[in-house]
Length: 115
Length: 108
Image (cartoon, rainbow over all chains, first blue to last red; front, side, top):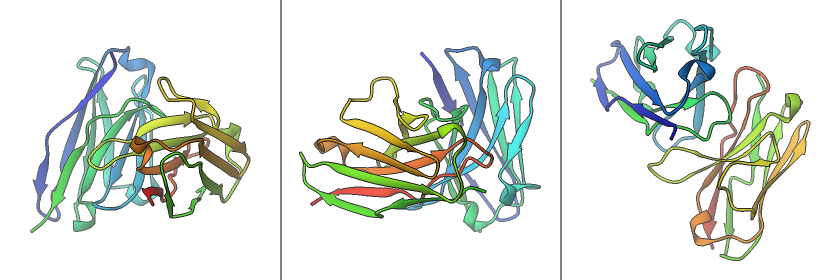
C-alpha cells in the first residue's frame, strides 16, 4: 500500500532553517511528483510547491521563492522540503502528498518557529 | 494566480440533510482540474473528488461533485455524523495549485 511517512516535529528559532523529509513506499517513486502543503494553526491549506521525482523539476509558490528548496533522493524514495530564514508565521503543519489531487498524504510535521 | 472562493464559510445542518458547498474560481479552471477534500482536526486532508466530478476510491456515493469553468459544487446528499468537518476545494490546472479557504459543515 502507498505510504508517505514524514519526519518528526521541529522547533526552530527565527532566522534558522528546517528540512522536512517524506519517505515514500508502495509505489514507483519516480513515476509521480510530490506536492508540499502547509497549514498554520487554525488556518486553511496553503500549497507550497511541487517536485517531479522523475527529473527533479520544481514549481514553487511565488511567496516562498528564494526561501524554499524541494529535492528528492531516488535511492531512498525520499522527498525533502527545506525552508530557510524562518519567521513566526512559518509555524505550521507541513504535509507532503503524492502528486496532485492526491489520495496519499503524509501524516504531517509540525514546525514551530519561536524565540 | 487563480483565487478560489468557497461559500458559505459555515454550513449548519442536521444529520440526514443535504449539503451544498460552492467553489468559485477567479479564472476558468483548466480541464476541470478541481478537487475536493475533507479534513478533520489533527488529520491530513482526505481526497473526495478529483477532476471536478470523479469520486476517489472508497468515497461513498452520497458525495458528488459537479461544475466546470469557474463554478463548482460539492453535494453531500444526506449528511452522516462523520461528515461534519471542513471541506476544501483545490485547483490543479495551473500553477500555483491554489486552495479555497474552506467551508465548515457543523451540526445544527
